[in-house]
Amino acid sequence: MKGTSTNIHPRALQSVLDAVRDQPEEVVIQTVMLRSMKQAKYDPESIGHFGLSTEFYTHFTSPIRRYPDLIVHRLIRTYLIQKKQMKRL
Image 1 (cartoon, rainbow, N blue to C red):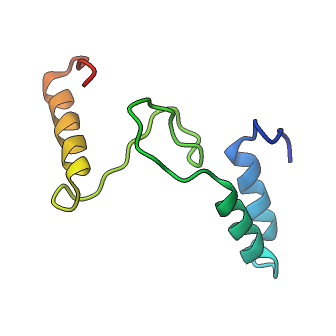
Image 2 (image 1 turned 90 degrees about the horizontal axis):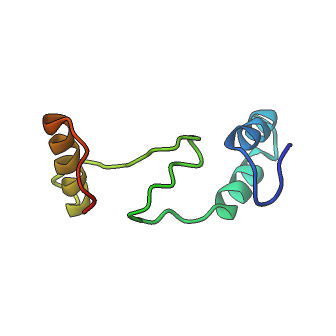
């Protein structure tokens, strides 16, 4: 696996998971990887999504389930309708 402890690419981790698929140690490797990652948190600074290897990312579910998800839906709708850069909230 290429990279350092502070600079590793998600594809490198995926290659390890692919290598142990259907092997006896698969569950242990998956568990160790999952527990070694930082817990997700909400932050106004967009840092992307490490696991998906994307620069921009947001998540949301049904807007009737959680208020932050309703806010995300409203922001996306406003952006799509206005087709312009919105001011930072």
